[in-house]
Image (cartoon, rainbow, N blue to C red; front, side, top):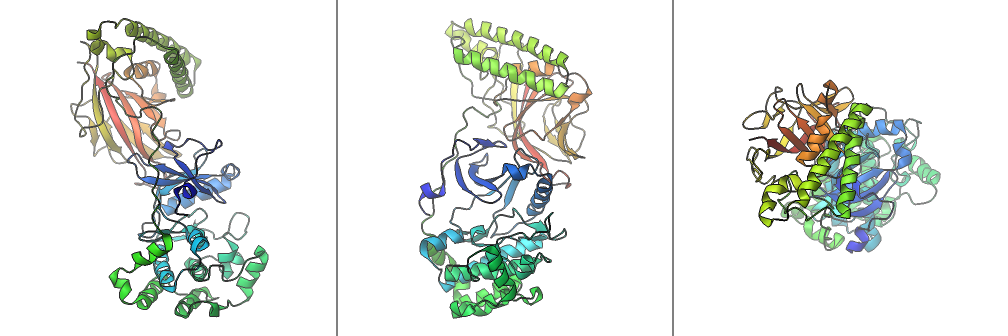
Length: 541
């Protein structure tokens, strides 16, 4: 499994290129809940994107449970867990993103090299027990701890996949009352659909450790009913395990949940058995033997179009080409659709079409009249999408980067990395735009009733649909039909990373917001949701 071609599978025809703004780089695998893909954050950090299967996504009960599980999983912070960083239970389809762990699963490592030596199993149990401390501390029972949900990173194990875990303060049954989990690694109370507690995960830890030491499930394989019967009614044969591991695994596999070891007791036992190695950092050497050389993670896939709020200045094309005409037609359709959906009236659609055609004619006329090379710098702002925007996003917030424009044309100023939450607001109509620690600004981020939204008392807000890279002309056309109070509140359910919003404050200075990071899955939990966006303001004079 150290071969990158085995770990990272190419995308297939039925795989989406994007999920909620994350561009997919490779397939990582598939499970009972859906497919898993490799992607990257805006900063280039690798993440694993799990996309829910369509048949599950269509089940309202599943979506509700999935939303609760996302909310609970966000509370987990631990050195031996793969942190949940983004998710959307209401997405189409639902999805979640965790930090990517470069390393094989325990199941893969055992399949490749056979059983692990006893010291490696002790390091494994100590790391997984620490992960369970973090998980249980957040009020969660994992419910499906097993070898495929334990990844072996270079610095220790990582527990992943809370896909069917439930917060411990809600029912331990599914909607149908059936047991949830993987039969070979269930606890007796789980197999009989009884009460599931943190001790249930300790039983699964004992089974997972036994699998690592033996290379096969302790209770054997076969039909699920047979395996579950053995778990409920028989004692496992621990004599096949290394003698050093038997006492601890026996404690974990106690039939009565109250008699099982706690995660803290597991960690302490493992430290005693490892002796000096526990404090001397002997773990990495053990892991190198087990995991082998680390796999090189593929680089992020380049976006087909720029996602910067303000592209670099470029000379205008000599004239419209066939591709240009297609782009203009697509943009025109996207703009018309956006306004029609937002306003809900055919009159607004007609206004956008009229304004857009006028803007396109002006753009084409200007583009064809720039034969004089000395005029390209003056005309580029109005003749091409990139000319209107100077280099953006490279300064500190509040730093302006005015583009060379003709006299009287608005100048673009960049204010990257604006963080909005439920306690601050974004100011536009001031000398130094940006976020302030109050709610009196032009734009506020709110999460109420059914989700999160951008709202304003005085500014019109409209989302652009289609490819990113909006221009001043695009926003002018779109905002030309944005009349009325309905444009002062825009829900963020359909917005993703890269989505853009045009804003027009009372001063008339047009603003473009491009989302760089979004966390709205837990909109009903105060203080958790936020939005980060790059802001471009076109000011006259």
